[in-house]
Length: 181
Image (cartoon, helix red, strand yellow):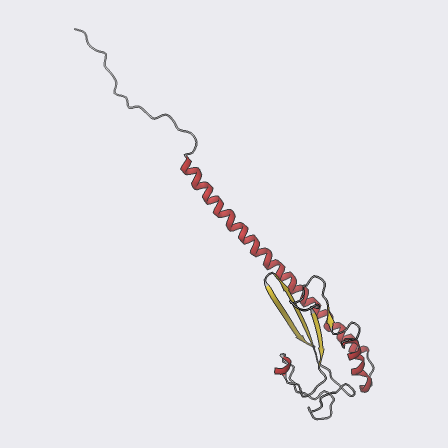
């Protein structure tokens, strides 16, 4: 009798697979796209914040420079009270040099305005802080006569408060810095 050779029961191993399935590739691409979109939107926000901080720093530097210039004009002006206020107003009045409306390089003015900085010299003792929109302790005696009732102290002022306004706009909106000097 013939015997059959013994067969070994072998289970077939699947062929070794290499590479990725289409589903794995699609999931990976989707995750990468979400990550790239998040990075690009973050980049836009960071650039906007950087520009805003740069504009704010430029505005603060302008307020400081205008305030220092205003104080130097006040120091250099005559010690005679009848001339002192007039000399300051001649420099920072509407027709003065540099004037009361100033451009600032790198900042765009508010819509409908052609300047970024405004200097307001207070010559009316009866004006209140509420009317000025700034806390100066007004009304106050600007001509040292003991009363805060004179509506024009340009001929005999011993103190002239000023307000420097910087108003600019960029993609984030309109911004303002107000400083009393």
